[in-house]
Image (cartoon, rainbow, N blue to C red):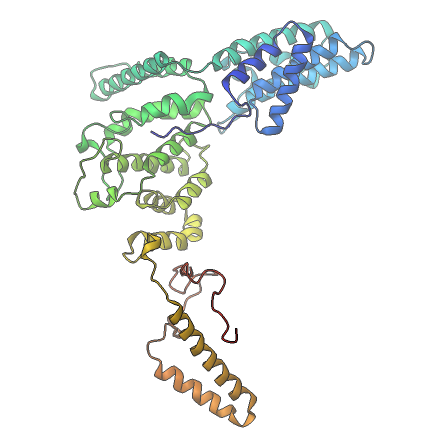
Length: 469
């Protein structure tokens, strides 16, 4: 599988660990450097809230240690309180994903956050400001909590951890099969999902869990008889029962999981071959498991299932549909065309806006006259170009003479009528009033987007040498 890049503001894992060492160093100068580096990261892009909060606590403690009377105790209490308020709110808000708002205390318990952090936030927001001594102690404990729950868990995954995750997912699969078949009265698979989530943080989803799920034998069954068909892109009931529980739990806990999974599948099915089209004719091509048509079709069926649950509000509510649409339009092929068609089935507004593009993609994919190589472009000689110029010049002179002679106004009309009637092979024609339909700007009345590209020989400055030189 192609590794999906993850955009981060730091240049390397070494820089990430270096900044952590600066922020938690004994030297005030090093901690100041760490704060400045986090501010530099913020100018490059989005920085995780845990890092921003760490830098804010460190900066507040530095102003407390070296204030020299420049700020009062009250100003310092306001500074600490604001850092606490933003810290707790930023950690709690991403978990508020349900229809009904949960209490901050219940979310704090889920995040393993001390409840008195929430009480300090409440006091700083609605009551008297906590004392400076309490705020200083809270700052130290908040930094310790961030170090244990974020910084230390961001170490890159080793191959042994990847192997353990794979074995846990296989264990989950077997337990779900037993539960579906009725041989296991209790469903212990959720405990296995919890163990997987303890090993992986949201930052490393695309590097650990998703590549494993996309291997043959996981989301895509090893048996080709159990895979989806291109006619309807329907998953087998067994596959949905086995994997839906895990996928929904991951989606609920990690807001980016659905988008990462869809993007991973799109990268895999973005192939240039006609594998899926061959499967429509029940002619399976014997290729590698990761590129066989049935494998790609089953992945496309998973996208259909996820998009269906998104539009019905059952799960994957954080799915970025526009990102999926952009990917499929930028990289059109037989596989991504199926994704576009299924999205149009669920979204009438989307169906109206992209219909012309889908028709154009379909025409290009199935056209036998598409020019794929520069060598296939018809050659135009200089003699052909000169003959065309002479013909156009003759027609222009003829039109100018007719327009300058008022007595020939009737002749102009009759001449044009004769030209139109005699030129039966012209590409231009008038649409009948009952056949013409309104269409988007740039489209023909039948909804097709015309191809107006010039051959390479004509797409540039003229090379014709004037005759008087």
